Structure formats: structure tokens, C-alpha cells
Amino acid sequence: MSTGKVYLIGAGPGDPGLITLKGASCLQKADVVIYDFLASRKLLTHARKDAEIIYVGKRGGAHTCSQAQINELIVEKAKAGLTVARLKGGDPFIFGRGGEEAEVLVAEDILFEIVPGVSSAVGVAAYAGIPITHRRYTATVAFITGHEDPTKENSNVDWEKISTGIGTLLFFMGVKNIDRITEKLITHGRSPDTPVAVVRWGTTGKQTTISGTLSNVAQRVKEAELKPPAIIIVGEVVKLRSILNWFEQKPLFGKTVLVTRARQQASNLVDQLQELGAECLEAPTIEVVPPDDWASLDKGIDNLAGYDWLVFSSVNGVRFFFERLYAKGKDVRALRDVKLCAVGSSTAKELETFGLRTDMVPNTYKAESIVEEFKKEDMKGKRVLLPRPKEARPVLPLELKKMGAIVDEVTAYCTVPVCHNLEELKEHLKEKKIDLVTFTSSSTVKNFKKLFTDEETRTLLADMIIAAIGPITADTAKELGFKVAITPEKYTIEGLCNAIERYYQKK
Image 1 (cartoon, rainbow, N blue to C red):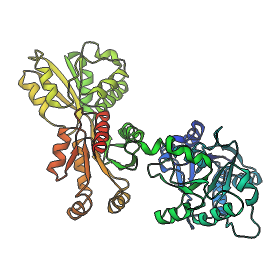
Image 2 (image 1 turned 90 degrees about the vertical axis):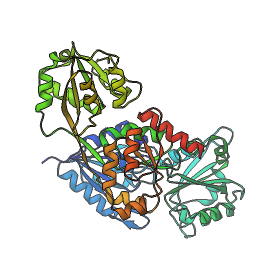
Image 3 (image 1 turned 90 degrees about the horizontal axis):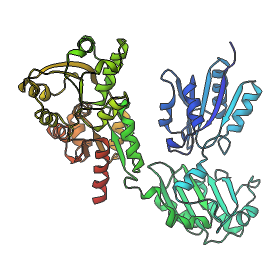
């Protein structure tokens, strides 16, 4: 068997959006992903479903694997003929020990590539509003390990030269030694009034920044009980944070939002919440799956020419309908004589991806609104095909039948309850780390409630802030004992996010 290939990939400083295009591409084709503690687990969504995922994180002395064991693992997988993505926080060649791993690969005659990443020094400083160079302040920068004990006799750091010879100093892994680092800099000539910022979990929603000077920042870090991982930034450029601090000013910064939506659909909601500064914890309570039997949908597709209206109540209905349409050897031409109704702008946009414009989009996105729109039409004797989820609300077909329409309900998909990370979710709730729970359908509410005992509901969920996408979902939540604080006027993902933003702005 031929030897495989290893990609040493920089994952960036924490924000999963900072992975490079090449880094994401390498993850997508890897057979094995070996990742570190500081590499965002959200990046694993780029990996193939059949890829082997191996965690080798090292955190504060608690090492899953030693560096020697990690090296052996990479070599073993590559020699088995596999493509290996070695995912490392920040950049692999800046305090990432990527050089050491690459040397091992050279010695073992294994093909490899280095995929640079956004260094934590660069990314964290930017998200803290601190440019590490600036024409008014400095043209020199140094990256320095803060892990080394500054008091040891044979230091790799020339404190005398860096203290006054470099404008901006960035210390990696230095929080535990910050008192000795600041003391060393002052002793070797740096002004005690030099501005300093210490940034923990930079570029993420958990970002925390402590500011001060060389003379007092160590005490402030101690009082704040700031723990690793953190970057220490020393220099006059830190003054610019007071006017350039953009990330921590986002409306949902510091808030952790639980997203219960199906994973296939969650990305849009997560993206918008993260854009507002929130940290998102994804714990889907439903999964959208094909129906047990395609018979009713197939029959509807085979007889499309006999229908006057085709009504889609969701994006999922559109996707599964067309997936089945194509599977049966047909295409959009089969809908040439059928009028289309879409519940909501997102559903209408999904139809546009197939080159189709809708004939009817109700003003509000619930069954009752569709009924009002159809009352404007002469529906007597008209045939309506309604591809829906199993166990959908009966309001629409019943009301259409009252108007004289002939309605065929067909099951296009099903929603089934899931929760892949229940223990992690409960741990977050116990530690009061979740600020808000979002529900985007009645099924997400029902399945979420089933995850907890009555005692857990009382102790973990009693004071939880709930945001529901619309009145139907909100009513379901209230019936199950939840206190709904947020319901948007426009029942869309965008409307939900806007309502959440307004809620926190008022608070």
C-alpha cells in the first residue's frame, strides 16, 4: 500500500470563519482528522461524514496525548495509505509545533503540505481592536513564548533587547507567568506605564479582555481570575482599542444561544446570530428525514397535470419534492400548468433556485394566512396537492376542503427527535452558560421538552429566556410550561434574529 499524505493545517484562533479556503478544502478530502484543543470543533463540519475524527488536545497540563504519541499517530495513519488532516490552533509554524511534526514526516519519508492559518496573535489582536502595527506608534512586532519561566538562567528570550527594541510584544501562553513577564520588561527598561491588554478566548463569543499597564495588569488579571488560553499584547498600539473595539460592541456579544433547529437548516440561523456577536451552541432536537413510504408523494407527482395548485409550506417540502421529482426522471416542466403557493419568503426563494416563481405568498407565514389568501380565489372543484411533513397541522387542508377544493395531502418528509450532545447540553444548563433558547417549530419545542425530567425542567429551565419564531411555536412552548419572552412580528429567521437583538438592546 502506498503511503498517504499529511496536511498540517492552521485552524485559526477560534472563530471557525477564519479557516482558510485551502484549509477547509483539505479537511473535506481527509480520511482522518487529528485535531487540537484550540481548534474549533465547528470546523469538523467540513470533514466527510465517514472520516475518522481523533482528538489529541493538550490543556493546562491535562494531555490526551503526548507530542511523541501525536507524532506516532500521524505517521501510523499516513503509512496506512490515508489522507490525514492535522488540525492545529492558530498557525502550525507559530508556536504550534508544526515544525517538529513536519520533521518527523520528513524522517519517515511521508508526503506533507503546510497550510498556514491566521495566527492567534494576529486574529486575537484584531478582534480586540488592536492593530499590532501602526504608523503613529510602531513598525516592529515580536511574537514571544510566555510559557517559558522568565527567571530561569538560560532563557531563549533576550529580555534586554526585546524590552526596549521592539514596539509591539505579543506573548503566547503567558497568563500564568504574567507577573514575571511584566516585571522582566520593566526591569530591562520598558516604561511601567506601557499599555497592556490580555485577551482570553479571542475571536470567539467568550472573548474577555483585561486592559492595564505593565505596572498593574498582572494584578487586574489575578482579580479577574483570567485563565488560559490568552494572548498578552504589550505596546502603545493598545491605546487604539478604546476607539477600534468593534467585536465586543456587537449587540449579542457575550451571549450564548442554544439552537435547537435541525442541523440541515441551522446554518442560516447560526450565521445570523454569530454576525450579531452571539456564541451558538447547536443541539438539534429534530432531524429531517425521508418518509417511510414514497407512495403518496409519487402518486401526486405522477398526476401533476391534474392539479390546479401545488402548495409548499416549508423549505424542506420543496427540497424533498424536487428530489423525488428528479428521481422519477421528471423536471420542472412537469409543473408548467400548476399554480404555486409558498408559505413564507424562504420557501419562495427555495422555489426560485429551481427557476420557479410563486403565484401566491401570504403576508404572514402560517396556515391561517394561506386560508385567507385562498378565500380570494374560486377554489370550488380545484385540485390541490399539498406535500407536507408527517403529522402537520390539519388547519390548511380542512379549510381548503370547506371552500370546495379537492385536497391531496402527501407525506414529503418526516421529523424525528434527536439530541447528539445531551450531556454537554445539560452541563451547560447546570453551569448557567446558556442565555437564550431558540425554537423554530412546534416539533423543536416538543422534542426539547422530552429531553428533560420534570425535576430537570424545574431546576435547569425555569428561568430560561425563550425565543419562538412565531405564534404557533410560541403557543406550543407556553402549553409545555415555557415562558416565551421573544416572538417576532415577521415569522422568519431574519425576523427572529432582529427580535432577539431588540430584546437585548432594551435590556
